[in-house]
Amino acid sequence: MSLVHFVERPAIRACFNRVHVRPGLACADADLDGRQPVRPLSTRYTLIGTAFDYLARFKTAHALGSRNGSGGAVDVIDGVWIAERSVEAMRNRPEFAEHHETCRRRLDNIRRAVGAYVGGDATRLREAAAGAQWLAHVDTLHRTGELRNPDARLDVRVHDELLALADAFEPERLFAGAHRILLNPTYAEASRVGGADPDLVVDDGIVDIKTTTKLRVDPAHLRQLAGYAAMQLLGGIRLPDGGLHDAPAAWIGIYFARHGLLQRWRLEDVLPSRAFEQFYAAFQSEMDALALAKAA
Image (cartoon, rainbow, N blue to C red; front, top):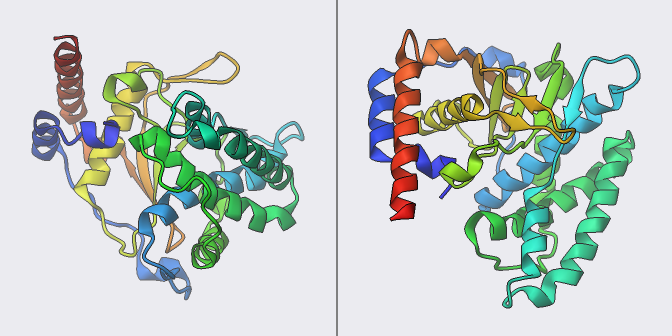
């Protein structure tokens, strides 16, 4: 289980559905500025979604992180990749142990390529995209306990689609004025819900990346974002330097990757008045119930 599944528990879902206001989309067709959405080139939707989560983080660090230490105001913070946890887990899983050393070497090579890209070498984007595709394959071991293809080869259609999505993604425009961006951080209390790691935390906002083909607000996505906002209050995010990012979330957003659009809403517009307090209480109550069930 993870937070995505935790917020679908009946009590949390019922509370959210009762108190929230479903927002509309402020982004209109005009926002596309004549651009065509990025079309799927394959049916590997889950792989694309996970791989682009990685690639979007790489491009954010490439576009904004290079300003660190040179007078810029953007502090881009990355942490341990989920795929790294998967590779480390192989060591103690008999059925995957034989893949550990090979996957570790491949992971190290991807780290070097991504490091060069993040460091400012734009020519390494294709390598970063190829690496993101493999990371998405390995990522599943940590998230689901399954690993079907640790020796996965590059799917050219997926690769081309990722590059098109990366071309549509413009961190400088989308996050103009940001001071701190956390890339796929893990909440301090994540273990209480089986894992909770938002795609991006931008100052006092939380962004979920979606590669859906339709510009549509799904209530499940809003519940997920509200859940992240609750985790932000519960213990915040531990930073690599030992600090804590625990400012309450003021806004939530969805980046529609195929359209290059970021839709933001103030948290109080989705959960107005005391609605977030009620959701937070239901969220905590279900965490306590889950803990008791595990202890029984």
